[in-house]
Image 1 (cartoon, helix red, strand yellow):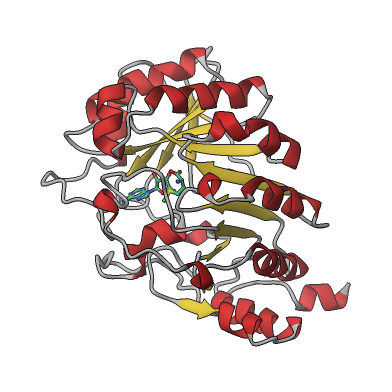
Image 2 (cartoon, rainbow, N blue to C red):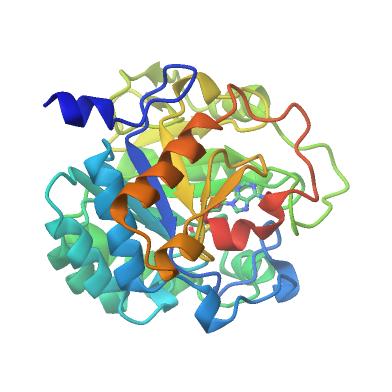
Length: 332
Ligand code: SAM
């Protein structure tokens, strides 16, 4: 018991770290304007990407230090062969209380049975527009219907909650805020509005970004937004609902309102680094020691170092040339 407490990941600002987000690939089947338009990011070579057995070892070590929640992301996680088996292996690790997946939904319908069987309880799906033509413009692929079918198949399979993430892009999809929010009246999904972060390889929108206060006040035109109690799995989202709605509304504001004080996470990048903070360049290489055959104790030290180096707050300026340039290999 005492040993466990000593091995807990608690950063120098007394924030307990219990959440690991793992990007299993930098490959994606979409080319979203705000992430990796025209596939400009350098693709990692196969040998640079962590193997599943390496990732499972990292997760086990994290769990021995207090990690209880794992989210698998990408790139697009479902394009990596063996993703569903990997999810199943994670779910079997004693100490994992919550297993989640972030996907663009393109391959969701094909994989939903195995995802559900693997034990994934929470699903985040990126969908930035309700207009199939605009979807093709934003993502470079004409697959809106497939994504929507995927969402419905996940619902039929009983996955809950299903969170639909819309990155609000000024002049591109912001006139759909109300249509999106209204869907929460009829569907039991969480519709979440994310401030666009002008980072990495995202396009220059040439328009000031629309921040949370403006997003919220536009949605409030539909009706009163009733605040909901946060629960431990909410992360940075502020949650609301309309009276009598089946679903929820969430706001995520990485730009206007930092949620650093409650940060409980570390990220593992596809190329084998532990990232202390999404918007900083602070990383610890875990792939080299793993491949050099280091014992678990040394890998624990890597976790400790990444935790120790977590900044109290994200950098004041989001650097366009920072690590976040590789959002595609970090996974959001
Ligand atoms: N392929 C999966 C997907 O589409 O959800 C997972 C990877 S994607 C990088 C993870 C999340 O990062 C998505 O919800 C996406 O909207 C978000 N994201 C990527 N670039 C962003 C940006 N510039 N600003 C805000 N969110 C961004």
